[in-house]
Image 1 (cartoon, rainbow, N blue to C red):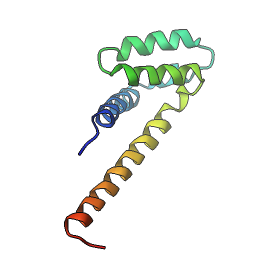
Image 2: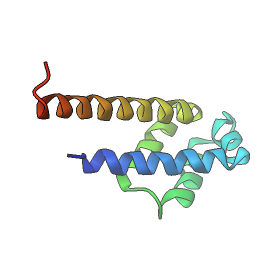
Image 3: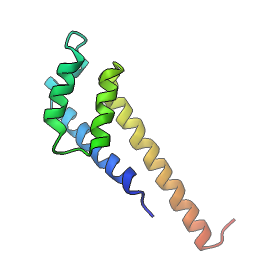
Image 4: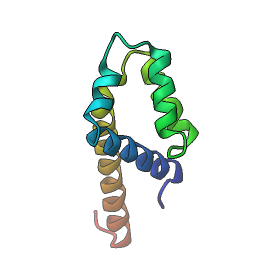
Length: 102
């Protein structure tokens, strides 16, 4: 059974990833250490408020506050990799149980 919060988070992170992949300017903007964090947060809020759930948006704000927003693509890629791996393991376990394979 899918986990709704994981599904929502995955959808949101894919939106962020797609937006970053389509905007070199946004990637440069969030990676620029000379731009104040408050400015980065304001822009990210303007871009994503209508598209992301509040938890996902807050996650972006935490990354800004911690000075990690510049590695957001790596964080998303790793998260998606782990989700895929987990789903694969759950599917395998389900199949093994259904067919009583040991």
